[in-house]
Image 1 (tube, rainbow, N blue to C red):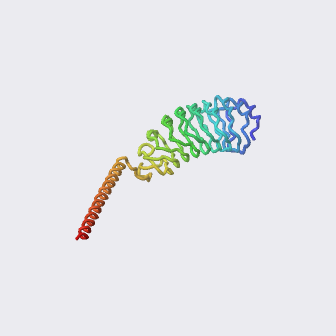
Image 2: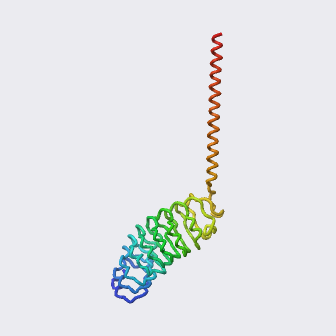
Length: 274
């Protein structure tokens, strides 16, 4: 395990313990390293929860805890590390629960990876404040709801991965106006027409597979054609005309049958009287 005595190295600025086999919890004394600018504990066997007392880091630019066995919720104190500008990577853990609104405090962060956890709920509207983001990876979680308008504010976003969640509804039109280098929306529950503009005009820059109710888009996406509202109106008109025609035909046939029966009965009555 990482020894508790690590907290005595109060003047340390960079600490890299990644790619080892450290286990058990992250020692509470690590909060004493208040001069840290970079902390990397990624790809170990660390357990327990993320310490909530990391807000002593006033100069931290880079925090990597990915590839461990950390569980519990993401403490909102992490999102109060407003100095984070290079990277925050909490991916490949067992984190669960909601994303707090405090995520909006990371205004200058460029790289955020929360993928391969068990995070849920809708995305908080405070995402609109994370205007420095260039890479956002939320894949392989349990996020749901429609994509919030808040993401339209992330004008610097180049790589977006929201795949393998439970997002639903139409794909927002604002995405076609953003300068993505790659966008992955695959394996969600999106539906409706896909744009043929912006990132959606190049299949090497976008993935939307696994959304079975999408239609339209460029030919290379191999999606079914959309049923337009005009087509629906025409179909409704044709259906109405068919119903009217059938009704009229049935009425005419009914009247003919009644007339025939009356004629037949009258003729029979005349024959009997004679």
